[in-house]
Structure formats: C-alpha cells, structure tokens
Amino acid sequence: MKMKHPHVVSLLCAAMLALGSAAWAQAPAANPLLAQGDEQWAAGKLDQAQKTFEQAVTAQPRSVTARMKLGGLQLSRQEFRLATETYKEAISLDAKNVKAWLGLGFSYLHGERNDLSLAAFNEAIRIDPAYKEKLSSVMAKLTKP
Image (tube, rainbow, N blue to C red; front, side, top):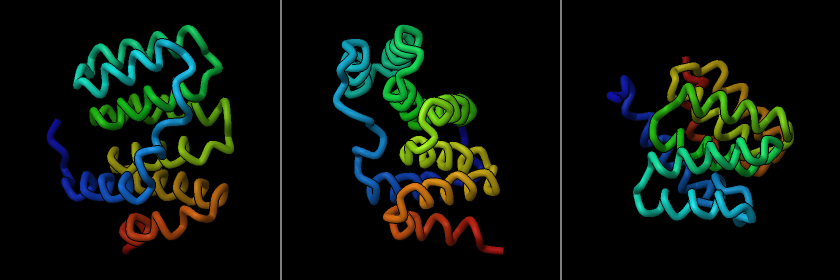
C-alpha cells in the first residue's frame, strides 16, 4: 500500500521509539495463542501471526491483550481500517487503556482522520498526562493550520 503522506510513517516510528516497544504489548502472553502469535510476528510470519491473534480474540472475546496484539500487528501492516476497529473494540472493553487510545490515534492518523486522531491522543493524555510530552511533536503537526 502506497501512503499518500510518507511523513506519517516517520511520525509513527518516532512515537513508537518515544513510547517504547512496551507501548504495543499489554502484558506477557499468558495465552499460548498470544505467545505463538508473538513468535510468528518476530519471525516475520505476519499472515500466520494475524490468524493466530484472531484465534486468540475468538477464544477470549473479552481479552484486551489479544485485541491489542492484533491491533498492533494490523497497524504495523498498514491495515489502518482494521486496526481502527480492533482498537475501538479494545477500548469498549477497557476505556482507560491508554495504549488502546494511542493505537486508535495512530490508526486514525494514518487513515488521514486528523480530527479523530487528535481526539484519541487527547484522551490518552487525559488518562495519562505523561504522554503529553511524548506526543508533543505529533500533536503539533495535527494542530497546525
């Protein structure tokens, strides 16, 4: 998929570095499917990892962790519409999950929905004000006229 705005990839990379790799993983994978999906993802077997994470969501429909892993993989694969829906599902299960709001913000950003991206980032900052500084460069770009 060719991106209309390649600068958003650099924004995502900068934000992931600023937030740390733990920003996209909820907790150590207690579910064997999540551990298997993590291994597949690390090995570059992205299609298999996606199927495994989808199985984990089906097996544990109330698992925020499963949805976060699936959303993170979808986001990394530039499947922004899918990632948006997955992060919304995670938020419906845990509205105070700052990492789900961040994922939603980035999926909206890449989908060129700047208004919704800004709202999601603002919610993440409201939940955890420590993210205000970490997101400052992204927020500055989103609020530029």
